[in-house]
Each structure stands twice: as structure tokens, then as C-alpha cells.
Image (cartoon, rainbow, N blue to C red; front, side, top):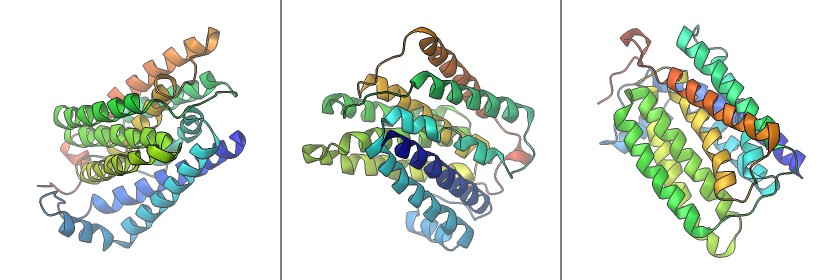
Length: 271
């Protein structure tokens, strides 16, 4: 069952990140999107066939992701999904030097995270109180990064933090029973992340927006797997690999968060 979960995680990652690439290409060329006119902004998005194709590809990828979580531990599924940032780097404009450094460091870190997990990770559905605290803290961090970082990178990072919080809530909700009360909270996280990433697409390049969202969406749940869901920390070289992995993930995030020049930013100047 674990192997099937890992395969579903990989397929899910390709669908989600391919969808991001289509959405970014479309949203960056649209008139300004704004939360002050949410229905107008949504109408602009759905009128674009390319954006709609990317959106439904992402929905399909998320359904596969939920199925993967039902079969395998959270951290293993995220490790299988981690290569999605490479999908964003392929087929786009020529990468700048900071982007090459960011993508290389991020992929190296996520690869080390995968190697550090081992093949027999056990997993629980976590304590409800701890999951609640994690999700509330994630909302606070998302708000702070959206304000403090450059616009595209800040909103992309906020989207990744919120998507990760939604994934944590999804894992908790899969226990069923009273844990289904996490469903409204996880849907709120995904809705907030969706808004952040669409606004980010008009403020930065593909990797500075979707790339950062993917990076944090994959990295944070691996931490949550240990902190919340009883997935034990490895010893020996695996433990050292995990420390090195998070250093590389942070290097990648910093490189991809660098402020872009006006020419590299999205075509629209959103309100």
C-alpha cells in the first residue's frame, strides 16, 4: 500500500505543478486581479481556457494526493511529491543565476529529505489540539510573509504555508469521526492559499511564486510528520541528511525569494 501511495504522490505532483505552470502563464497576462472584487477576478480567470485547464489539472492532482495520504505516511507522500519544482523549471523562460541556485538547492534538499525518511515510517493522525495550533500558527506565518517579502515571493510563500497547513488538516481529518471537523478549516486554508497564489502570479515569475509555494508545501508537512504524526526522527546518517536537507531548502527559498527586476515581474500591476 505504501508503494501505491508513493506512485500516486508522484502523479499528483506532476498534475499539480503542470497546472501551476498553465495558471501562471495565463494569470500573469490578465487584467489586475483583486480581492476587493472576488467574483469579477474569478470570472477573469475562468474565462481563460488555459487557466481553467491548469485549475482542473490541479484539482485532479489534489484528489490523487488525498488518496496517497490514505495509503502512505504524510512525510513519504511529500517526499515523493517534492520533484514538482522541477516541472515548474522546465519549459519556462531561461533561468537566472539566482533561480538556478534556488532550484538546485531546493531539489537537493528535497532529495535529501526523501533519503532521510527510510522506507518503514509509521504514522498516526496526531493530537487534535496540536494540529489546531499548527494550523493557526501557519495562518499567522502566512500573513507575516505576505507583508514582509517581495510581493510575488511573499504571496507565493504564504500560499505554500497555507497549502501545507491544509495538508496537515487533511491527514488529521482522514481519521474520520470527530476529526471531520477539520474539513472546514483545511478548506479555508486551501481557499486562502488559492487566493494568495493567483495574486502572486501577477506579481512575480513562475519560480518566485509557484516555485516557493511548492517548496514550502512539500517541506513543512515533512516537519509536521515528525512533530504531529509520530513519524520518528531518523538516527545516524539519515538524521544528518535531514539537517542538511533543511539547510538546502532554506537556501533555495532565499534564492527564489530575491526581488525581481521590473522586467521579470508579471505583466499586470494588480491593485
